[in-house]
Each structure stands twice: as structure tokens, then as C-alpha cells.
Image (cartoon, rainbow, N blue to C red; front, side):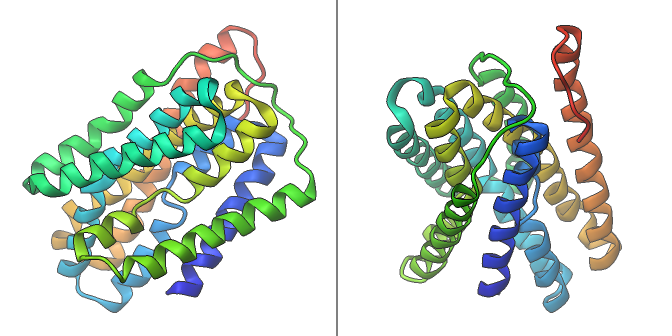
Length: 262
């Protein structure tokens, strides 16, 4: 499972970076916000456990989901003021604080699910205004390698350190957005705040698909079982992410800015 997660992290970071070369920061962020890491891992979990256990894991992920959105919003708002080190610290403090509060509240399943569903909507509204970036980008190969190495190092550190803490803290650490920490730092240092906000806004758009994926699992696993629920969750996640991206792309098209198809 460790090797699987590290491989998925490397694949997502490299893939998102290559996509940003062709389609820009927004599309790269949308892909990164999807359950590209959590989804395949959840598939392996469902193969090895019962539908009931899988549902419990999906529900635990939804509990921490608002903290993930808060991480993106805080990083975006801080990016134009305190640089990438300060933005990184502020975003992770927001994630850990809100995540710990949500765990402490012990919300019922319906309340945790409802809060998770409205979180991307709130996140989109709280994102700061920015100037839309051009479509094509230049990312040197050495930076691509550094992005992948940083993401894999962070993933390994989180996985190994989680075992030293109580279960609730470990679960929160494992929910920390890895690509949401790595990609914005590189983007802010090379391309500036506007590009970083574009990237993080794309992250939140992709999170519509993320939350849909886990909501479908929570609702449908007791009804359909593992395979059908998993396939349905992916179809629903892809559909919602596409809709969210299309809605966001309309203002850019109306303004005559270049757009791309996700």
C-alpha cells in the first residue's frame, strides 16, 4: 500500500504538471483536486475488506474534507502577501485546526456529508479574484523532477509519522492534501500569485468530483456492494468535475480568454 500511494503521488504530480504545460494552471488544479490518489487506494481497500468497512473509511474521509478545502482557500489568499513558505504554513495550520475541530465534534453521518458537500461551493466563493493566466506554460525538466521528489518525500513522511500518533490524529495527517502542498509552492515561486490562485481554484473545482466520489460510496455501498458502487462513484465524480469546470469556464469564454476542454 505504501508503494502504491507513493507511485500514485508521483503519477498525479507529474501528470498535473505536464497538463499545466499544455492547458494551464486551472486544468492542472482540477485534475489534482479529483480523487486521483484516494480513489485507486479506496479501490484496493474495497477489494480487501467488506462493504461496511469501506463505507466507514469513506465517511471518515468526508469528515476531513472541509479542512482540505480550507487549506486551498487559505493558501490562495495568503499567496499574494507572504510568499510560498508563509502560505504553506498558514494553509496547513488551517487544515489541522479545522480538521481537529471536526473530529472533536463527532458529527453524525448526515451532518458530515452535508458539510462536505457544501464545502466546495463555499471554497469557490471564498477564492480571491485573480487575473487569468495564459494557457501554455514552460516547466523545466529539473523542476518536474523536484516536484515529484518533494511530493513523494512528503507522502512518505506523512505515512510513517502517522503511526506514531493516536488514530484520530493519524487519520487527519493521512488526509493532508499532498499535491495541494507541493504544486502551489512551485507555482507561486515561478509563476506568481495569479497563477497560484488559478491552480487552487482548479483544485476546488476538482474537489466537487472528490466529494461526489465519497458521498456515492457512503450511500451506495450498503445497497449495491463494492464493485457497482465503486464504478458508479467514479462516473459521478467525473461528471460533477466536468460540470464544475464547464461552469467556471463560461466567464473566461465570454471575456474572450483562451479556454480548454477538461
